[in-house]
Length: 144
Image (cartoon, rainbow, N blue to C red; front, side, top):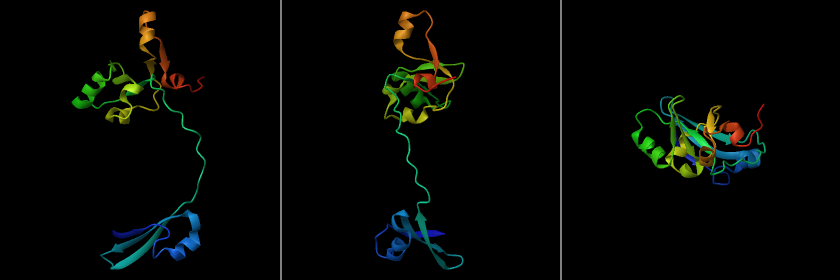
């Protein structure tokens, strides 16, 4: 099936559908099935709309776990240059978020990790062993 035409609400050919669906109409598509030689007119509509809670941004000084596939040498090099620390036990990099924001590495952050991470460099200087926290604690989420 081939889509040959996609129209936005208000364009020529969508008037009757705009009257029917109103602001819920997202687009109208004309699709063609070559085998049966038929044209299908489809509509995309909004079925449900909910207000989302405000996004909690990750602070730049937060240490985030980053998973890089074995053999991805360029990403590994980027992680080292960003000041990342490799944890061989869990096979993850721990990198300060501000160092990887808006880079390719940001796509590899593990969002729902319950692993311990080092909070900041100061902890290493002040204490013999670095403090360990879960990601949720570090980002300010309530924990049990």
